[in-house]
Image 1: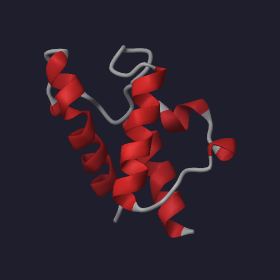
Image 2: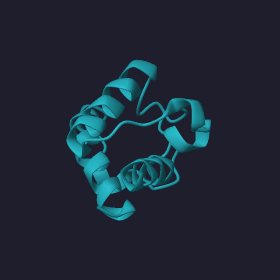
Image 3: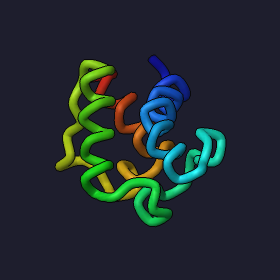
Length: 86
């Protein structure tokens, strides 16, 4: 699975939360900070990460991630792609 496919998976997982906010998947850009914009709070972020880890069959090493890597679709896609490659 490549980064673009991973980002699509994450967008799909975000869809219910986005709908509650009156947003669509297309409203979320790859570089958007999901926590600063209020799309995710810390609990929702951890829930999202857990769901994606389970779906992809891999785990992220949080000790090696920067804040930018786990607050945007671009960063999450990259982090999960790296995790899948190892």
